[in-house]
Amino acid sequence: MSLDEDGETNKISLIMELRKQGIRSNDVLSAIERVPRDEFISTAFKAKAYDNHPLPIECGQTISQPFVVAYMTEQLRVGDRMKVLEIGTGSGYQAAILSHLCRRVYTIERYRTLMRDAVNRL
Image (cartoon, rainbow, N blue to C red; front, top):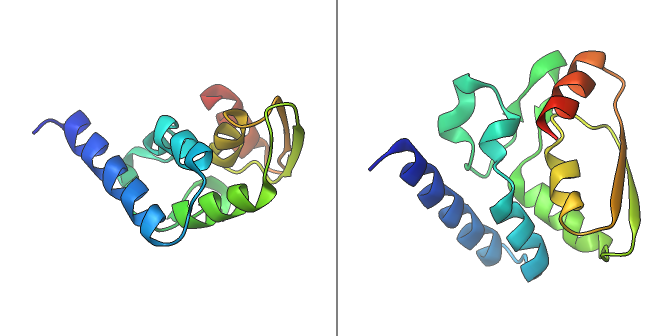
């Protein structure tokens, strides 16, 4: 099995785990499936990209656990005509998820390094 196949298998397992944990929104699950979490973390953690755990990113911060991202996003109940303001861009992963669900996402980050990296990813 290639690395890409492993990643896809891990992503499918994550989606199934999120469903078991109570995430019901197909739109949220679809957004999580479409956004490659492995592109929002350092190479050192790529093998753990689809584990349901937070992972370290630059500036002593973390990328949130996928369940937390899914739960928060589901609770927002965003629609495709809405605009969302996110405080704390971090890796940009949450903003990428939201971008699949609403019209526009505005995001603010206090660390220049994180903001620069997120802009390059998004």
